[in-house]
Length: 507
View 1 (cartoon, rainbow, N blue to C red):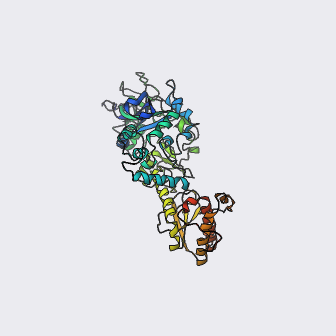
View 2: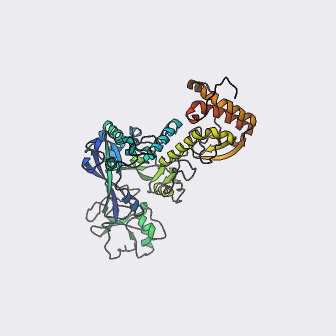
View 3: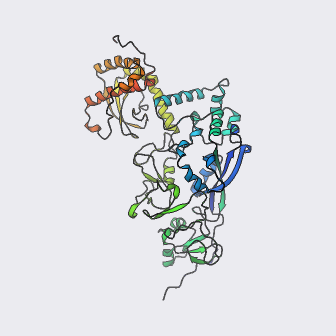
């Protein structure tokens, strides 16, 4: 005879304001020259985006005044879901957003363009902004944040660092060329818990079978936070409806009062959520056997045959319903989004992959540090004869070796392949007198030749960190000389402070 089904405790189930929903209010600008003033916004619709965890609520509240670029105005249609419009944006997204979703029209410089010609221009512009006075040109005063009118119009936009801001006339011109839809967030409460907007409690069969006093929970995450075992959503067979307070099978609606319990339902995953499907829709991945957003379909962590790896930070499986992110490091490591945010919360010189150290996140501070390294090299290159030392570094990002002239600062070395400064020092070599004499004569000669000569410089094989142990010191010195010639001829701006001499004369 089957065991009698236990009824839950007599308490009333349901938390009618337990979920915090982040909602984006979409708008476009009436007049591009008036920026983001409230009276210049034409509001279009509200889009519920996600449920905010309690631990993240404070951070969201701090960002509520920030405007976020959403999609080009020519893709907007009131008859389409926002999810449909996001899919249409895929083909042209790279025109407006870089690899890390930085909005290019708001930025004066592309943070992925590390060529010295660009970074030095950026650095010099930053120096001008830092020395702005009341008599400086209007654009610099605006960028420096000293114009009340400019601040009122654009203070709501995301700050990529004032060195990379655009003045008002540039922002207005770009908006006229490509009008955009923007969003500003606000928070609202809804029935549910901190994890889901929902209208029912999940019954844990394990808790019920062992006679636990409490066996119904707001969701499986809430269950896992309270007891010493886990509740996989797939194991949930019954729920308690918060409207009629009756128990019934899990599904799209309560079998007793027909109240809707979820806006999406997968018979395998059994995730119950009332979050509207305007922002994103979901599909079930047959390979990793879980539901994912259609927007993550091409880049989600896919655990084939159920063999899921663990997140390197929290050590929990990656194939849970926690959001994952594929990092832009060469290996494409996966990590939970929440873990990634926590690890890089206080990073000041560019967010890095916690596994291999490559730069993968916010790049504004890293770009400035790299620009400073290039400027330091340019300004101090005449001083190399005081040290006569070769610094061999390995770039964490591109994996190549670089041969730097030591100029008195250990923090300003950079790769000559990708020109980033996320490098590790490997070796120092003291130059021989003959090598010093060769460089003293050669650097000005290389500079004095026409720029077209750069194309005739023999290409050299870029040494890699992997093969470094096999390189002899003589080979490294030869490589240093070839790389220095290439650098002088292809990027003479780095050697602008070196006096040129007549190549026909002796040094």
